[in-house]
Image: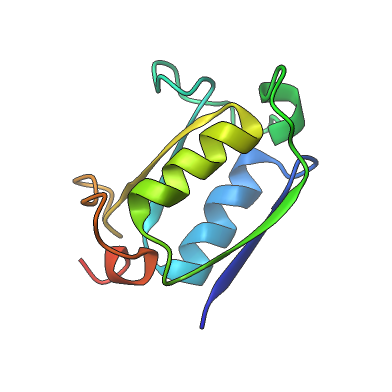
Length: 103
């Protein structure tokens, strides 16, 4: 089973690359949980999180897309959206991260 480890020191570009490698899907990262402005690839998650708790977390491929997006918002105060591998459409919140990579 594929896993993704995240911590507050990770850069946005590293998070996106590791997500793609682990699950095959594309991850869009935003500066706030409302997903208004895309995050700078050179920014660290810690620099974006404001008052969020941060820390380290591991996510498995059987986690649902909606739950993954919610957990990252709670932990790091950022917005993320999972898209298909070609980054042409957003994945359904009810499918797993593994299924999102096969859309």
